[in-house]
Amino acid sequence: MNARIYFDHNATVPLRPEAAAAVGHALELCGNPSSVHAAGRESRRMVEDAREQIAGLVGASVANVILTSGGTEASNLALRAARAARVLVGATEHDSVLAAPDRADLVPVDPNGITRLDLLERMLSAEEGPALVSIMHANNETGAFQPVSEIADLCRRHGALFHCDAVQTAGKMPVSMDALGADMISLSSHKLGGPQGVGALVLARDIELDAILRGGGQERRRRGGTENTIGIAGFGAAAEAAARDLPAEAGLAALRDEMEGAINAIDPEVRIFGAGVERLPNTSCLAMAGIAAETQVMAFDLEGICVSAGAACSSGKIQASHVLGAMGVEAALARTAIRISLGCGNDMAQIRRFVAAWGRLYERRQSVASAA
Image 1 (cartoon, rainbow, N blue to C red):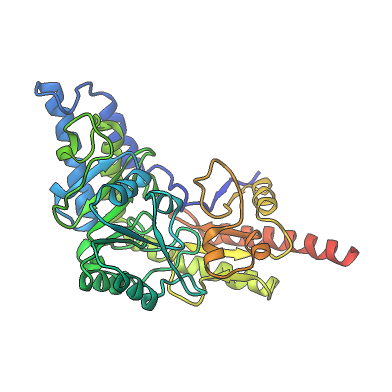
Image 2 (image 1 turned 90 degrees about the vertical axis):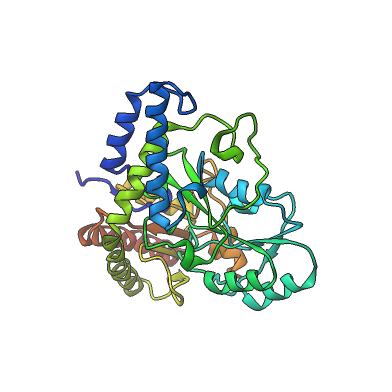
């Protein structure tokens, strides 16, 4: 039987060996990192070493890395704890950003999912008072990059804070706080090969934040609660390994392009969302009209291939993508979209096996259509 193919790296990247080793070492420790005795100091060293590794991945100051339970908490901390009178959020943001503020104004996107800078500027100019803008670096479903440096410039001109969800880009491409121009970025361990349940909010400078988790003085009083030493150790090791392996990630574009070309040859009407703009090299979001996304996901799973339908953060629910809806894609077509997200370990033989499976599913669709 053929080995299972994993094409869902935007949901979770398999645990890196370096991260597993760091977790194993951390499991041998028993000290609370806030304790002053020798066992506590050893745990604290492990946490601070990891903090330095995470800071190094994105070119940040070690003191400005706030460790959290994941990307969701990091984004919630940014949007709920910053002292902003109003919040502007991109229409294609991840649910963890869209649902974080009590109230937010949505910034529209164009048909490729790119932020309408003219409308963002109009929204920033419309009202006085400190604003917070949250626009992701690259979309988790389509892979489309946002014009983050231009967004950062707009925010600076209007005195607004800029938060950027970099969960999908950190570890897949070089990410620099200086180059992004963001005041805050969110990171997630399991998106770059670390353990699940740990992440970070990284600040470009010392920004006043009102802790949303209270009850302790941890993380310089910006996030209460005993640090997850085991997860943090794995996160740090994964961040260091991801920085080392970045050149291999760039090569995934050739695999993705080969796959998209072969599928387009089978079905000339296939829709590849975001294909007209710069995307993450590993990501493809495409629709086989007439076959529901959940049917496709199950069909490919039976062929031993793991793909997803949009974001994988909704308790297994599959529904029409709000990302595609914001791009103006009709609901019926959006419900047929799946995401293929590649990673290290995927190769051309796996691409060919997936294309063959796609072809068989397409032929069944055509047969059903002809019979009808």
